[in-house]
Image 1 (tube, helix red, strand yellow):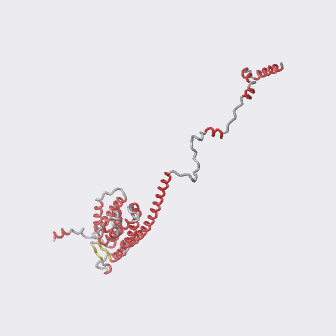
Image 2 (tube, rainbow, N blue to C red):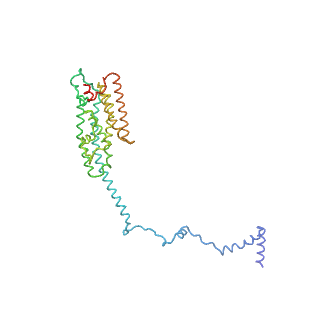
Image 3 (cartoon, rainbow, N blue to C red):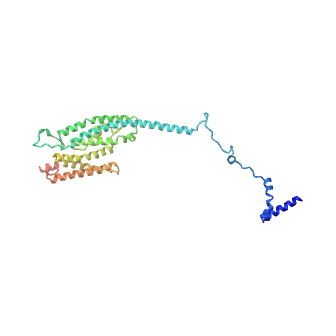
Length: 327
């Protein structure tokens, strides 16, 4: 009786608070439902991660290599290959050091030759009938060289034997690696081009002609079969030599040698025409050949100035057959 009265009072109070009868009727059932249906315990993140992973039998977990584990055969091949690479690189580096040591000596000897030949550009008076006999000329193949100039050339030629010895040492070094000439050729290419330039200039001062390829090899003691003078190095050195001729012409005219421009102009004209026979690509040699054209133009301008001022009489001497017919 008391329980029914208490329940009626509870329902009346709930209707006053919430007029919705369905919600109020279910309100007294919530404690009972919550007590009988407890929520499952929340699992930790570590447990969820473990449950999400596959079983140990479905995949392989690599373990730390022990002393008894044998590496695969591929690793042996890889290690052996790179070990051979290391040995090759070390041997190549040691060989390059030997080559560079000799190349530095070649460069030093070339600088001494160039320093001596710079003296021929000095403006010295050409001896005439009113000068003393000390200024006598040594005339060889239409190229006039003073006594001082001959001494300068002889002093420069003393270094040729040293160059021959240095190139012999280079050949001995390259014998250690047969078949690899072009691999190391770049280490002495520019120095060889400078050497050919100085040798060709000395040869022209003495003879008035071009130093041919075979003569250049003979001066340096090179063998075309084993260790020779590359054609491109020779041609580039000749182009370098032509760069010295305009300055030489100007200084000779200043010294009173008014026939020098004509001789140099004829020489450069023939040389330029010979180079035009070559099919040169757009590389360093082609650029140096283009510079020869400007050297020839400068010499032609000096010859033109001397000619219009009447400092020289007539032109080139007639050929021998023309002289014979006229006589």
